[in-house]
Amino acid sequence: MRHLRRLAAAVAFAAGTLLLGGCTTTLVVAHLVDKLTEGDPTSCFRLNSVDRALQPRCGAYHPGSLKAEDVRASGLPVCPLTLAARDPAFWPMLPELIAKGASPEACTSAPWVALAQANPCPDFAAASPREREALRWLAEADSRAIHHDVVRALSCPNARAAGLDTVLDRWLEQDQLRADTLPFGMLGALHPSHLRSPLARALEARGHSAQAALGAYHGQLAGGFEEALRTADFDALDWWVQRVPTLVDRVPAAQANQLPWVPLARVITPAFVPEATRQRELVDYLLAHGAQPWRALPHDAQLSPATLAVMLHSPLADTLAGTRVAGVPAGTTAAAATAAALPLH
Image (tube, rainbow, N blue to C red; front, side, top):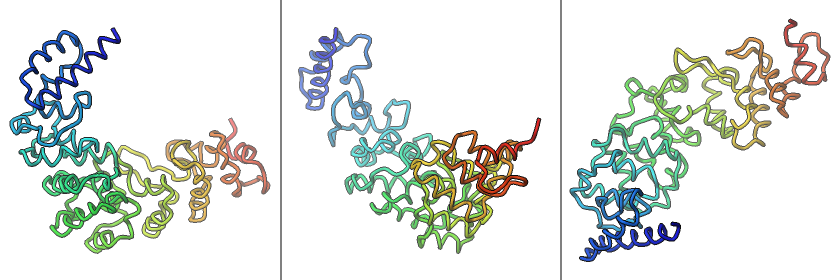
């Protein structure tokens, strides 16, 4: 059976190659493939040109192989532009899809949103100039691309290195980033490393604020302050704290059915900070800027960042417990300080 499947795969690949070349023997090969692959996914030769190009099992995409009628009516459950945009492996298809009539309006959601949520900062420099121009066109031609997660992707370091961040400048010039109409805060959507940019300063001059950027938004990527905290971007944290000093202790809930969250508690939670070695730096930063390790957590009055650290066996427990607790001598261990702080039952 294993040998038959290997043979079927080889024949299927050959069928796809013959089909691309217009060979008259394709039907004979195709019949053999059908017999060898009964019950398997649809044979490559039966797929239309767009579906076939999006199936790695059918061989590499060849420029010029897409038929215009297949582009206009692919029959796929997901828009071909979305499939091609969200996976850099398919970016070579984008110029031909667009040239042969693919339209982002035909997609149920913006292809750029799918890309940003699948990979917030792909290697845009690895794309060819034509592919980057196709990506730029997709962003500028689709008003739905003005989205929290897309702004994050377009302002990330890889996008800036490839020159795609100028899409944001164009949106600003065209008055498409109005603070009073956008359903998200631009300053919270920007990549943390872009907060000192001329664009960010222009946004503030036009009424965007850090406080407003802490509000609700539709998107999957973290808000700007949370992302700066998670990645230990201290320059970005300074930017946020200078504008909203209380963020070091409490981040307001974005929506009415949510609770505020506590940066100290997030930082000591395993896996929140990808680089665990940065945890201590972040705790020191927050404490130096006024975070309160013994203040009760919003979701549980019996817990504080200091007591939570002990429960989690965090290596930072002693650092957080090193602040005063009434009736507990200085230098007391984290466990003893926590026991003294907890109510008696």
